[in-house]
View 1 (spheres, protein in one colour):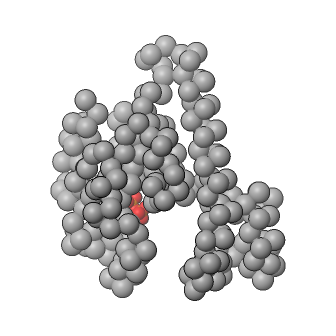
View 2: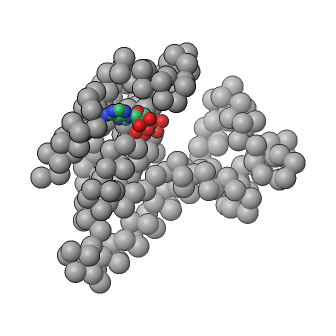
Length: 202
Ligand code: ATP
């Protein structure tokens, strides 16, 4: 089994690549955003850590964390953002390690045909949060600025200012390419992307 790490800036096509790997190649997806989201739920370890630091004022009436309020607070204060990350990132990492271990164990009792052939780790912060060491290979999904902007504006309805603000807080194209093993160019049609993936897997 091979562990593939996916990285790339906002809207570059990470989820699209992960989806192809899952549907066409039977990969098991680990999406760190989904794991993190769950940690904010009432009763979870992440929830307790966040509420004890940020206080009850970040809670909605139903006692759930008000994500909008929390993100406004950390967006305006780098130290608080660091603190929030220090609560959430280690818990996400723990959960990722557990999933990998479970799949490895399950694979041991299966025939080669039944085994999970790939685990894909999809995360916006593969390098920053230390996932690189878990991966056998890291792919950088690269896309030209204009193509990305058009897709995010047309499909997700993002404004240009919103895209620029997100990109400012992410690694640069050069940092991504310096830190990856392979680059997947996603400027074309989905068919082209599928071909590139096929090429990288052989
Ligand atoms: P985020 O950083 O927000 O998690 P992402 O890197 O996972 O985004 P995707 O969600 O895969 O990016 O892609 C962004 C948008 O562009 C999606 O709506 C997706 O359907 C579309 N898209 C991705 N690749 C292509 C392509 N080759 N052709 C057309 N649309 C595409």
